[in-house]
Each structure stands twice: as structure tokens, then as C-alpha cells.
Image (cartoon, rainbow, N blue to C red):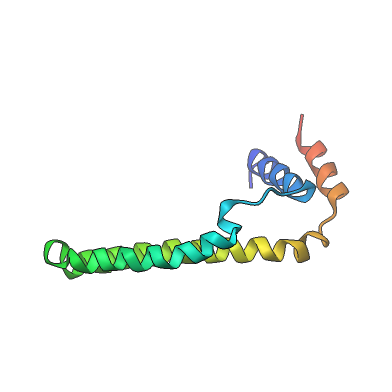
Length: 102
């Protein structure tokens, strides 16, 4: 890992340790809204089958699956942060940042 990359990672980690603002992805209304939007997307996708074919449906389905999986992983990571963050040593991270910065 380069020094610039390590510095960026450590800075982001310190910002997250200091406090995190909630994203709209973590709101309850987003989870409730996501599934009807996905169902609507599939409805439209299957209505367009004559124009896009089976290959288009497969590509569209993979994209929707990737988006839903990314949101699920992001939400799960956010919820687990409270458990993980207590094991991180803030002072050690700050010391390493001081070593990396000229």
C-alpha cells in the first residue's frame, strides 16, 4: 500500500471513529421503498422483453441484484460498526498518521 493510500484510509477511519452521520440508506423508509422499486423495475423489464430479449433481462436482473446486494452489505456494515469500532485504537491510528505525514 502506498503512503498516500494508507494516509487516506487512516483519515477516513479516524473520521468514522469520531462520529458518523446517518445516510439515507440506513433510514427505515429506504428499506421499505427499495423492494417495491425493485418489483417495479422487474415489471418494466419483463414488459420490454420483446425489445431487449432474454439477454437484456439477464443483464438487467444482474444489475438490480448487484445494487440490492451492495445496499444490503453497506447497511449490514453500518450496523456492525458499533461492535467493531470499540476494538480500534484511536491513538495508534493517529500516531501512524503522524509518521506518514511529512
